[in-house]
Amino acid sequence: MASLNVYSVVVVLFLTCGAVMATKENDQIIKENNCETKMGWPCVLEAFTSIFETGSISNKCCGELVVLGKVCHSALVKRTLENPLFKDLSPATIIAKSIQTWNNFLGLIDSPSPST
Image (tube, rainbow, N blue to C red; front, side, top):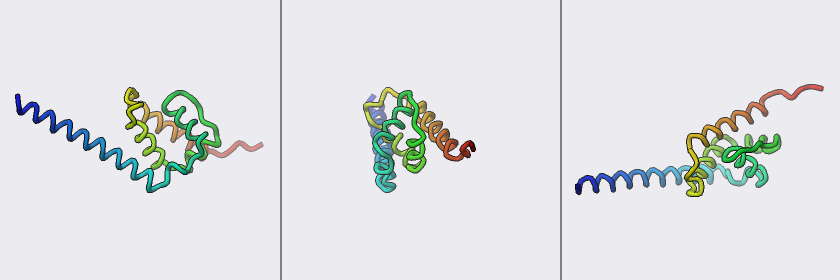
């Protein structure tokens, strides 16, 4: 019985350390790339709503998101998922929406505009 308790403590410590390291890794990426300064607040809200809730994002904010870059985009989404306020969300679903959002915006930026 005592070995089971020791095993449980070791598992909890391992998982906690892994989560802390992931948080530090995302924070380091965000800091090194100045991720929090590359988008205006209205576009941050639009992107958040389109990924974490239901909504659309304007072409202007699409452009800002692409300028932000995929590394920053991914790190910011992952850091948001680490926030206890979002513990009830499915990380797999949010990351899938994040990737879909990113790919949609790249498609919009890369596609030629219709000529008139």
